[in-house]
Image 1: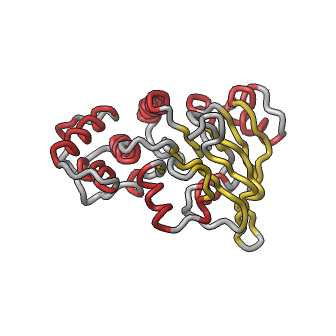
Image 2: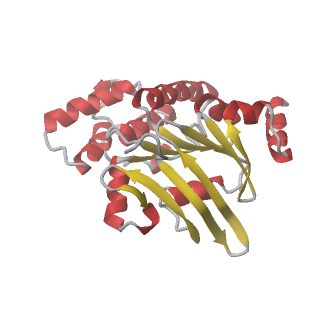
Length: 259
């Protein structure tokens, strides 16, 4: 992979639901180690955009080009299903808002993380278990709980377990959908601090969808603001939040300041 070129290039991505616009003609480049935040009110199209980029939704038009290790830039929308599935197990991660959507609740914590390692060819039980234990500690879960089921964990612990499951294979790109949504404020702060450290330490690129401007302020290098399926403003995060140019962005920022 060439660090001078984009890791992810989105071109003209459009998705409609009948007359309703999910997202329209969205385009941006994401470079290695960069974090892009996407904000907007509920229904602004940010989750639709994320789903299209991550291959969960089929867009009506556009390209999602990823700089693969083996073959360089490839449009993931034209990849075969096995190719895309391997990408999601290795170089991509997807962190769901609700951890239960990203975990197998009937499998132990260790099994949840170890499964991803086995999916990429790991077979030595002792080595897998040791690596899982190390990752549990990295996300601030006691390794002594490796055999416990996720259902016995708190919401914050479940989210940290989902993050370990996703990052254990060393992906280069993570998609995060409201990663702190639904958690208590104190738990959110701890999780954000953990995510910031992991992104930095792993040199991870990420696309984070959230309605919480504090989340992007802390994690994102650049910011896109969406309204009615369209990008209305984009720029460096601090620049956009401190000096918003579009009326909609100004409303978003002022509504937070008034709380």
